[in-house]
Image (cartoon, rainbow, N blue to C red; front, side, top):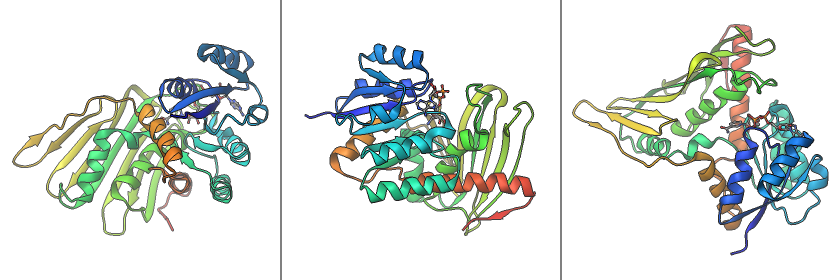
Length: 315
Ligand SMILES: NC(=O)c1ccc[n+]([C@@H]2O[C@H](COP(=O)([O-])OP(=O)(O)OC[C@H]3O[C@@H](n4cnc5c(N)ncnc54)[C@H](O)[C@@H]3O)[C@@H](O)[C@H]2O)c1
């Protein structure tokens, strides 16, 4: 089988994992990496035995590269994604995809114009327990969906210095709420603030409302001394709880409690496998550019709601 030539732009904490997985998958071959930090680029290039660059425009000339992961600082994601698309490459851009929706819109237009695949790194969607929840909600196995509550709290990862907790962290849960309900919220009310971070908000409490009366609650912060990543979904007949870290799922109903077991799988590996399958089979990815744009639009409304201290209507 011919492998897809891949590369990674931005090989810090997270991009290094993308490089490792492209190197491991049967269907992909890591061709090169790029990082503006010369020492890091050299070290990661030699770790995987591939050519390293400090300027992406140089690397993008390489015709053996068909697809890229963009894992730079959040404020550089859109710029690097645009360059990669304009060089004719398929792109998986990390969340939050762009810092502003205008930049994200430009990426969607460019991908469409060049007929390229553009997907966003909302890797939680690949966790089997979340897929189970999505399917159970769709088939009303827990009755009518009433509400969902997500908690994603931990200490501030100090390397994240260019966006706040909403665009960095809560955005995962914003996407998950859209995914499990298969619907866009119609309103948002949020409280955000900063306790320790100098430039950006480091906590956020978010309420999303839906047309039919259901709601979603998201608590995100960089203040809690331990790390929690959970989801609880309340239906009229049962509730489901997922721990994203252990990937354990619980279903509790009045007459029985179930714990469907799925073996733990590395979400990033599932995500990159899916990315490469979509390229090979020319199919639509589970997460589209539109999903990235919509999550960013909601994240911006969260910040506006908190600044204005009022609920914001979403279009
Ligand atoms: N999906 C997830 O669960 C997940 C998890 C962690 C990080 N991320 C995302 O991945 C991205 C990177 O996060 P990180 O934790 O690895 O940060 P990091 O600071 O450890 O790494 C970023 C790297 O990008 C490099 N860089 C910056 N601008 C560049 C450019 N224009 N060209 C080439 N290299 C450039 C930096 O030198 C650095 O090595 C962020 O957008 C973050 O939101 C996503």
